[in-house]
Image (cartoon, rainbow, N blue to C red; front, side, top):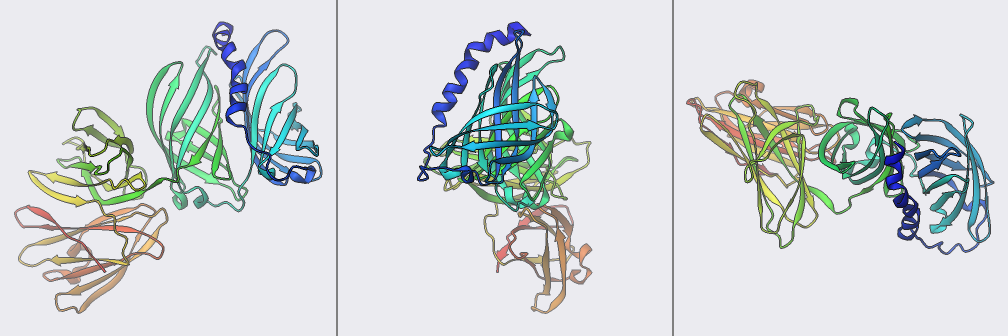
Amino acid sequence: MTVIRAKYTALLFLLPAISAIVNAQTIGSASTCTNASLSGSYGYTLSGWIFTSTGGEYPFADSGTLTSNEKGSLSGTSAFSVDGTIQAPTVTGTYSVNSNCTGTATLKDSGGDVIDLNLVIVDNGQSIQLVESDSGTVVSGNMTSVQTGCTAETINGLYGLALSGWVYDSSGNPYFFTDVGRLDFSGAASTVTLNDTVSAAGTVTTRSLSGSYSLNSNCTGTATLSGGTLHLNFTVVAGAIQLIETDAGTTIAGSANAMGNVVVGGAMAHIAAGDGWQTTFTLINPSASSAQVQLSFFDDAGNALSLPLTYVQTGEKTTASTLTQTIAAGATLVLLTQGSSTTSVTEGSAQLTTTEGAGVNGFAIFANNGQEAVVPLETRNPAAFVLGFDNTSGLATGVALANVADAGGNVGVVLRDDTGAVLDTTTINLGARGHTSFVLSSRYSSTANKRGTVEFDTPAGGQISALGILATPTGAFTTIPVLVK
């Protein structure tokens, strides 16, 4: 263990200096500071090393919140790891700010541990740079003002993630760890997916994880991914999220920053795989520069849907609920999901996010028994979709609906015959990113043996996609274009 740590000692002493150069910030217009310059609540992250008098070296990471009373007192919560042992105490302390915007702070946690910090106030009190001043430590970090009045939707969207630290094997040996990826928070549904690239002791792997999160009104929260294998504590600060892993045998912390240049590129209302069904996705980048895309799959309940996938052009196979890929300028990406012929059919929807302005577009084709139907990438968001149906002469009309939004809603349904007379009005409730598919005459008997239209009204503030399928008595089928109102 000591040998492994010694290998990295020279690098570790350089890290605080490198960090100080990279993170240098201006103090701002407030050239004279007081204790009141620390105002409100802050999210903080500290990391580094602790050295003992006997020569022991222990990696350290700490993340939490601190609230100032503007008069020299601090209080808050912490989650920290020393050599892979996780603790989560409460914290109290004092601080003093000099007129030149430097200062000191002393923190004591509920376990009795005390640390002393030197600080510099920057950005007019919105951020504070920190370094521990206790001998035998090489620890630094920062505090940033916390957002207020958080709900699950506060962090809705995409974030670029960067974590680093140490992980430990079963013998207690530490290995350096870095992680870069993309977090997708679903907002009202309180679900989260992570697609990342991890390097542990020089072994590089990619992951696709999914799970849930909770966010308190004070903008602190927790996330659990992949059935409980990854646990994170986090704090939402201005424009970012500060995180620390709370699993035993880890000393890992970092941040995630909002990806402001990524937008929803469209949705596919229906996909199918298994029991003889397969879906092929084709994504095309017509722009003059490369674009990053993320294709995510959701089941009927709006949960992440893990599918067996094949990159058609290379033959590479994977299983994932979300795929992130860079498509070169003018290039095409083709993916296939088909499952096993002996498994039951899996149905759901797909959603594409892409680099803003890239213009990536595409379609899907689902097939069964030699029959195929095209599912366009729906980029429109009208007040309503209108679908023509025909249930005469043995024909049958199928419908698929997907909720693109991260909040549930009621989709208004208006059924009319071919004279325009209203047959029925009702609603369909779709959960966040939820999906449903059905035969129209089976769901609404008033449409049996009739032609007409069905109107799907978009929930207020929401977004949906729709698809129509026309099937013949012999089993042939095709898609029906969906009109907008």
